[in-house]
Length: 376
Image (cartoon, rainbow, N blue to C red; front, side, top):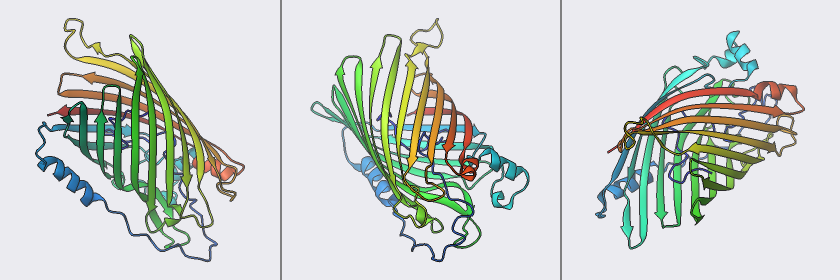
């Protein structure tokens, strides 16, 4: 279960596709025999002024508290930036014009994130409104940039805490495809996302925490791919238990994606996600300074079964099985400096009666990243 102090903003290090979060994308030859054009493009939902207004409000409201400011910088490398299948790698090596938008199949991403939080207390309650902005750039495939923003409101009591979150992701670029029922050219397959999320942690016993999670997403694709518009509903429950030397978390999520913009293809699905995480307690970095810098390793695993609901040739009878592993080393140098080293691996296996779908949609990806955070 996600820590409610964190959010779904792209990581300061390059964001991986969490288990179950990736889009399948259209068939590059889809729609060649369609007789109708795509629906009229929806007006984009621009929530940036709202987010900036809330951020300004946090700065101006005369609360008797001190603002907390965190600045994070990160860099990370991926060996499969566009999540290509083995078949796609062969097409790229042979110079297939449908993949000419790819500069390199691996890439280095640089990221920066700023978080502003304004905690204050009222009697026995603690409230923390905050806003985070993140920028990221790929060095080779420059179209893979991100500009994301998140607003949160967290409430803390002695035995529980709750976080409400809104995230605005104006452009998430996946890859490019030939728009065969529109322009007939290679066009970017990208979407805008609104995220609404709530996390509740309840501590019924000293060492146990029950975690409840809910989220709702709206995905609006650009004018070339409006048929992929849809809404995602997700709920989850988890349990965290702390032992003397380590802590473990086990979680289950149920997800349902409704393809509201479907035309002749429907990528609606239901999925089950199972995840677990093991973290050792912080340990002194050097035995000679037990009160100095600390570090701890963490290992996470997740598995998703995604069942597509369509009966068409591309999605009918299709099941995606997504395995993900994440290993991290966390270093708290002092009260202000933190360092994170991370490795992740994702593999998507596709079960389908259509060999071409399996050939195009199975992929594996490895990521190595590092991020440093400074708290003012």
